Every structure is written in C-alpha cells, then in structure tokens.
Image (cartoon, rainbow, N blue to C red):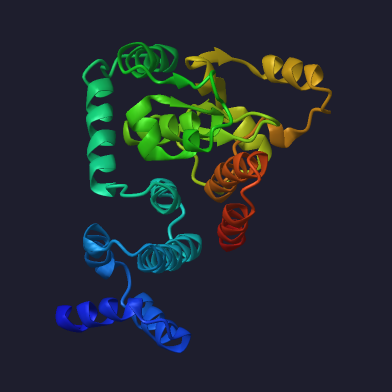
Length: 289
C-alpha cells in the first residue's frame, strides 16, 4: 500500500462510525509491521485521546500478530536460535525495542569476554573468566530489590539495567556463552533456572544417561555464576521439599526454556492483576508448546 493511502486511512481514525473504524483498523493491521513508524509519527502530531488510543491499539495488534508469526515459525523450524524467540517476546512488551542494537550489545559483550579468554583454559577456568567479565566488569546481577518486576524478564531492560532474574540472566549467559562456543545448556530446576556445562556440545539426540554423564558441573547465573555439583542440586531439592527426579539434573530443550521465560512474565502479571497482559502471554505459550 502506498504511503498516501496509509495516511488517508490514518486520517479516517477520527471518524465516529464504528463500521468505518473497523474497516480502517483491518486494512492498517493487514499492512504489517512496516507501517508502525508511520503510525507512531502520527501519534506525535495527534492530540485527540480517542484517536491516540485507536492508533495504540492498532500498533499493538500488528506487533501481536508479528510475534505470533515469529514464534510459530521458530517452533516449526530451527529451535537452536534461542535469541530469536527472546527478541520476539521482548519486542512486544518493550516499547521501541531496537533489535539491531540489542544484537550489537550482545556482540560487544561477547567480545569483552572473548578478549579475556585463551584456548588453554580448563572448563572451570573458562567459566571463571566469563563470570569475572559478566558480573564484576559488566555489572550483571540479580534485581534483589524487586525480583518479580516484569521488566526483569525483557532483554532490552536487562542489557540496560544489568539487573534480572534467574531466567533472564540464565538466558543471557546461555546466549553469550554459546556464541563463545561454550558447551552450556539450560536446566529447569524447580523455583530456579540454572545452566549445565558439558564435556562437549550436545547434538540433541542424547538420552538422559548420556546427558547426565557429559555434565562437568552446574552454573548458578543468579548468584554471580557460582559453580555447584549434582549433590548441591539434591540438597537444594531437599530444602524446598521436592523429590529428586532425573529431569532436574539434565538439560531441557530450548522450547521449554522459552516457556519458562513466559511463565516468569505471566507470574509477574498475575501478581499485579494484569489479566489482559496475562492472556497474551498464555497465547504465546500455546504457540511453542
């Protein structure tokens, strides 16, 4: 659709006829995310609150459709790229998120860690170097002041504030670690999310025994990347009165990790009684299950 046609449709948003609005809304939404900058430029010129609300609703509807499309494609195709769904989800909830700038920030973080590493490091030494740069020099850590703040979950906010929760810090550690060729995986520990460090990269065809045998140690990303063992996990499970099961010691898939992220977002929205936002998260979950 030409720019003049888009502008003409936007100007019709002040029409009080509901049928006209529904027609205009459908036409604009069908244009896709490419028209969002044009819609946003109109909000800077528009003083009518009703029109502003309509434009905001249309933008959110376009973004919702786009995220649903991206998650569905990711689920059906290459689930190895765990950054893609993380960006998609964050882009919906973080207004104005610049995904290119996020990728640049991730690359900058990767380079900062890479410069401190060398090929002769043992796995433990490698993680210690990573932790030193990630936590001490770059300042990443837990948002202990408000661990359940929904913003802790989003990648843009995490990169800017340097504060997150178990799943967001774990996801960031995982993404950057894998980009540095570290054989790390996510582990779905009850009430927590940790990483496992392996003797080599997993191919995805291993059974539970093979995965468990390849684990050298675990990493607690919420607590400055502290290293711990299988026995430590057993003690943790006893402390929270949960029976030890094999699945708490071995890696989970990328789809499950993204589901854990969505569960964390959902929990935050439920705590603040944001039912509409919670329904959106539930729909996103349905696309990756």
